Length: 314
Image 1: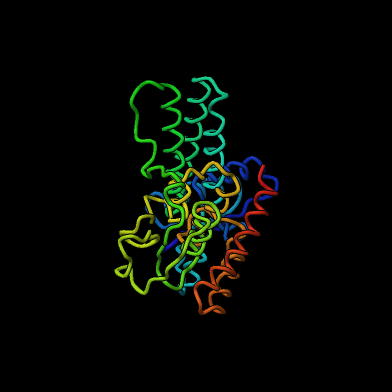
Image 2: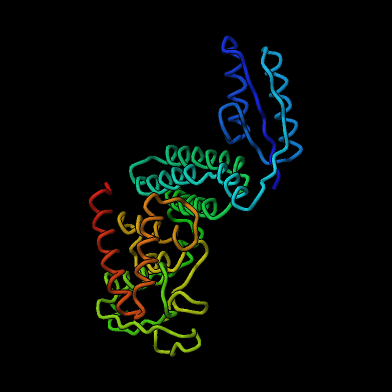
């Protein structure tokens, strides 16, 4: 991917011209490489738009030039692309969508519709400037979809509407004392899912670590592999599928845990503590060759995290 770089300088007295340039660059979604240097992916539209900003800067008594910028190696290319990360924008949208969904019972119909539409417009604005869309955008879209379903049900409670969820709700009573099976040498999603199963679904769960998914017996409950009873569904990772399946999504602390697991397993919405937790779990995995021992030690980490989330979640 090539980029366009606008080098612009305006005299300090040209305050109005400086403000117009700043607003134009912000509206275009420019990234700041350094003071006075603004970057966009190289497209004909961006080339024309930066040319207009450069012309306005010249009229205000400044100087501006547009150059093409090419990364010299993959690391630099990744750093340039990272300048356009919209993850934090999506984090705020997801948080507001979840909060609004939980507060719908206290709103009248008009207010609910107005707030949903406003949030959707904000999402569309972010999407318009998301030059490298990925998992975070998909997660935000899924949350807005869930909010829309809730608003539709609120407005027309007696009318048939879209399916509540693509994950059927299960009764935990039917899943007690079972054997659960997943792939050996578990990583974050499988570790966290096993922890969730034992802590919230089946306290007496027995885990089998499979050399191959084909080794899973019909009477075992498979998770986190293709064809398993519980696996990725849509944008959900297996941990999220389990929380949805057993009615655990309403727990704010578990929701924060789900966001963490998703970030470590599939990327997407940034979670501040994810790199540190990921490094810790990677160290545990390297130190423990026995998967049962690995789960026991990782479960301590997840227990501590959950307590922290409970303490810091309103």
